[in-house]
Length: 100
Image 1: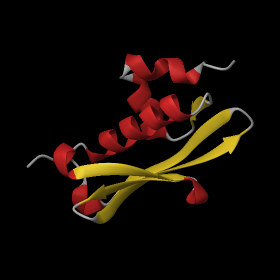
Image 2 (image 1 turned 60 degrees about the vertical axis):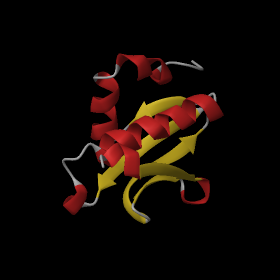
Image 3 (image 1 turned 120 degrees about the horizontal axis):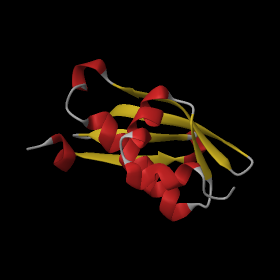
Image 4 (image 1 turned 90 degrees about the vertical axis):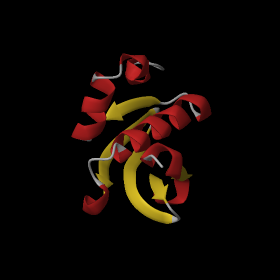
């Protein structure tokens, strides 16, 4: 079974984060803060024992999909991983400039 079929992301607005779950356990997170009309992704991490399986990409993709469908906020990729992920996924680059 692939990581993609067993992993899912939950938005936890009270904690200002998206949490990645796999097999009923949290294995990663993407922290953010909302400042004005911006959602600033500040930190992303995946449990070291679970790295190299594409989980961080699943986390970022699902978090950005949620931002796109649920808000009109502009994404600020303060986290280097999020910045690099968006840089290599052209279909998400519009999130960096919308609302401006």
